[in-house]
Length: 262
Image 1 (tube, rainbow, N blue to C red):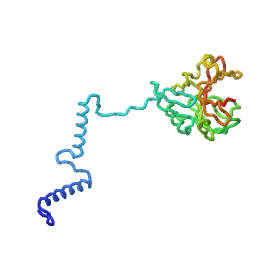
Image 2: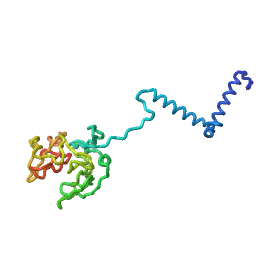
Image 3: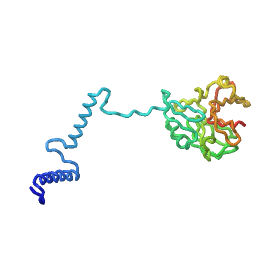
Image 4: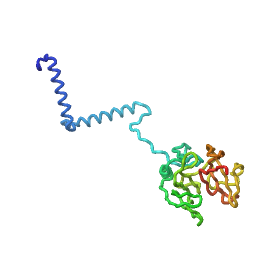
């Protein structure tokens, strides 16, 4: 065969090329048809690949036939410090960390996952020294006094104030904890301190920051120094432990608690 003066051997090559192209274009018009008396080419290829993978798995120690991703470890503990909230599993591994300058929505999502439930949200208008905002409450809602401008009290409360703060001195959010656990998740702060621990014993360990306040007892732990602000130089964030009775247990703690040295 000769194509426009092309030698015969090149003509045969062109013919073969055209034949392959035709088969390719025909294959693009739809899936391959079944092989008479047998499986379709697709099924044959699938079976071959599966058999190969199975043979490889059996021949390779430690390789399984199908790799299934493991479910994420459940959160069993929350560690609250003056700078962050850590979500941990039963082995003590930190799964996620949030800080108080992130958007409140990110903390709400993370805590909802940790506690296994969405919070109850309560908007408040604010009051004396308390800006307006929203409280996100997990666990039981506890009664508040009539003088309180906001429903602060709950087992675990994330407070989102308005307007948002500016790092590093004005956090967007802070937390108030009134229970040692919510939905089976244990909650503690530095040194493993939790609601219900003996206030006098903790005060003995932190004598420099333990302060009687009338019938109440305040202890500040986990102090973190902050950069100077204007004329103020001894600035800290801490975790504020509160005992309603100085001789009783810790009844709540809040973080971060600002101390501007005044």
